[in-house]
Length: 95
Image 1 (cartoon, rainbow, N blue to C red):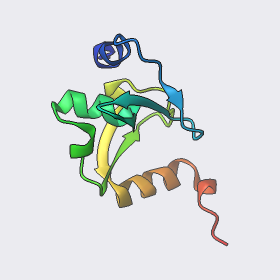
Image 2 (image 1 turned 30 degrees about the vertical axis):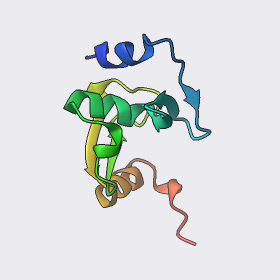
Image 3 (image 1 turned 60 degrees about the vertical axis):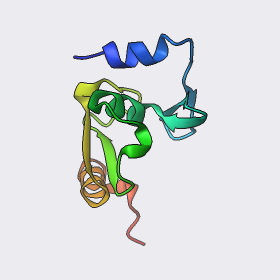
């Protein structure tokens, strides 16, 4: 596990804030960004806004508070929706 990325982000004295959806946001470069997107972008050596809009960062274990880089994967929005549906069919109401 590579907790160094999360630790280095949080060492700057910032505390993540909840976004109301079991995710955390952090102040970065003049705006709030999702912590897991910041972690993933830092691992790639890019800014969070450089992750293409049509790509999502997926939490492999389903725990949005587990932002360890080993728990994150980049996928298309469609693939992410399919993964979420397979993990929890109740998140999409067929009605």
